[in-house]
Amino acid sequence: MIGQLILNGFINAALLAPPAVAFTILFGILKFPNFAIGAYVTVGAFAAFAVNVQLGLPIWVAVVGAMAAGAAVAWLSDALVFKPLRGHAPVTLLVVSIAVAFILEQCVRLFYGGNVRGFDLALERPMRLWGLRITKEQLEILVISAVITLLVHLLLTYTAVGKAMRATADNPGLAEVRGIPHRRIAVFTWLLCGAIFGLSGFLAGLDLVIEPHIGWNLTIPIFAAAILGGIGSAGGALLGAILVGIAEELTVLVLPTTYKVAVGFLIITILLLFRPHGLFGQAEIKK
Image (cartoon, rainbow, N blue to C red; front, top):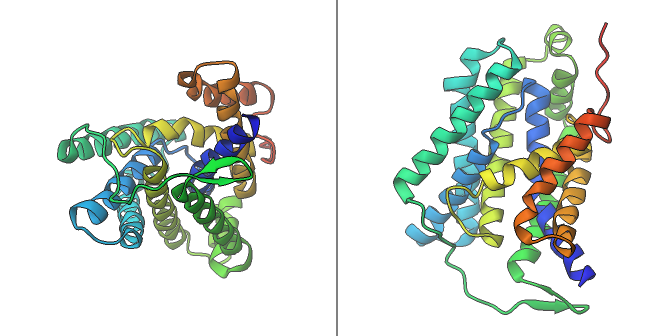
């Protein structure tokens, strides 16, 4: 029982880790919490559904479609909404991002309605590994999530653009003086993170059902994972996703499954009270 719950927790963490890492990267560059991330995930899930089911194309093409749709919508939301508001208070951008989330989700609902949907995949029995049940799709989620998280780490650590992104996140003004093009880095960050959100929508659609609230239901756990690890720390977001994912699953030992979502709220509340900068984040120094 415990072993199966822990395995389910890691699968849950695999759904949370990529968008949590993308969220913390986006926050590091743009300095505001973007509540529209759940809508980007929803767009990715429905884009993958459209490619796989409506167009009848293979599932790997649906992955590409989800990433392309996520990147395009994220970039367009910045170009049309967030960029004109650059320089405003973070709370202003936060409120605007909530509006963007509602608009995107209602657009999805307008075209697809509120019905539950799924990918065109063959039904298979779960596999048994050491007495634990796991489906082929869940195994794919674990592998894809691990690969994406590793690639993002390598990008940020060893590439010139990754170092430029970290420099911009640490000190935008100094980075600009040193010749780092802040605007181009911002555009690249939107496209990269949007693609990750789109991919996350595809992964969520593999394990869950595809419906207009699929991204919104993941928003609070994603925020909790990013805050737990420390905003601005990609590695911390990964660890936070693992802890939140396992905590949500172990909750069913003492509470009904409907209370799993409360775990994210509880983690955010406790952290904001006792350690606002998270496990690996750095406390802001005010002069």
